[in-house]
Amino acid sequence: MSNRFSAGVASLFIAAAAVAIPGLTANAWAQELPGNDYPTVARADYVYACMAVNGQTRAILEKCSCSIDQIANILPYDQYEEAETLISVGLRGGENVAWTHAPEFQEKVKNLRRAQVEGELRCF
Image: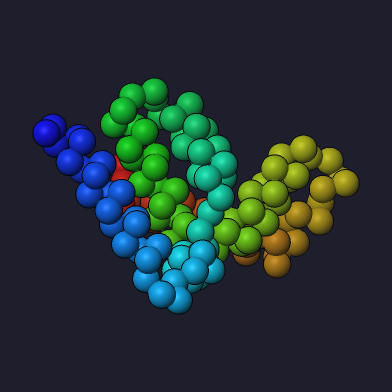
């Protein structure tokens, strides 16, 4: 029996055992996820943009993935999303987006920037 087949059978056995545990429901599994778990598409968008800037290699893929994981550990997703939106709107320029430069909004952007720096320091 190949190692790949053995691993697959073991995973199937563990999954079946978990389902058989009384009182363990889908909600119990979902509750184990951290509150700041980012949607897959948000992580993928970050990694895609990071690779576009840093290179299209496997090593960069791993570094960019590590970086978004570090950001997710520091900043809850709702704060990440809000800061990303402020940055995106602010890039349009003009007086219609001057409100994005208010101190309370800039603090949110600074929090994201700090999390990004931490991700770069730990992963790159």
